[in-house]
Length: 294
Ligand SMILES: [Zn+2]
Image (cartoon, rainbow, N blue to C red):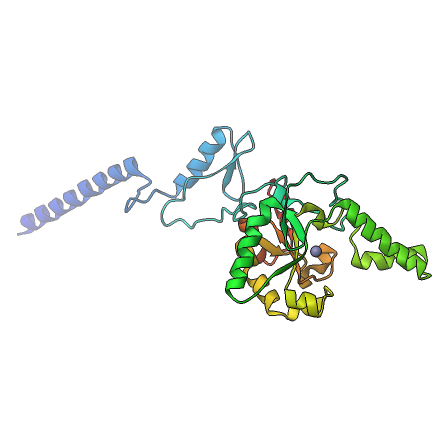
């Protein structure tokens, strides 16, 4: 009985020993184990290290910058590994470069000016002319507004530097004639006129838009236009046709120009939609493009 018992115990011990040896041997060959088809933890580091070995610099935001300055995303992280943010500063910005004709930036800031007249082909609307490249967009917007009972009237479009100079100097002269000092005359004129070379109307892409009723009854371009249905319609719909409200009330500091509910600027649909959706002014948008190296 005792002999049989010892034999059974010996057999059990042998089986356990052999199983343990086989298990340890197997583990030693296969580590690390990949389960459910998922790569082991080391794989992400491996791809980063390989990227470095290929002469690339790894950025902290999980993009790889090659020696020629171009940037590639790393391969997608394996399933189950959190996807780290890979946002580039240019993400979401429409295509376009600062040198594009529809992104020209003029304004009160010292650098935002032209020194010579632009060579433009112009198209006539109402009594005004605008850059022909924006004419179809304006006609389409005007027709869309008309279909909803809003009649748009182009009060002011292209203005040459020469015309602006005459208007500007005429205003200064009127204040001088009224007995103001030269300094005072300039200060008062600058409240209503942009210095020649800095006016967006030189581009043919600025559209002062009101309605015939407003033109006949109120005439003066001021905040009252913001109370009209036409303004509400324009603000809500202009981007669809490639236009932006150029001088919003909340951006006076950036634009250095008071709120102008009548002044719209053609920049093209994609830029316009980005600008209006993100509540930007053109100065801020141009700064974003610069930041993105456009
Ligand atoms: Zn204007």
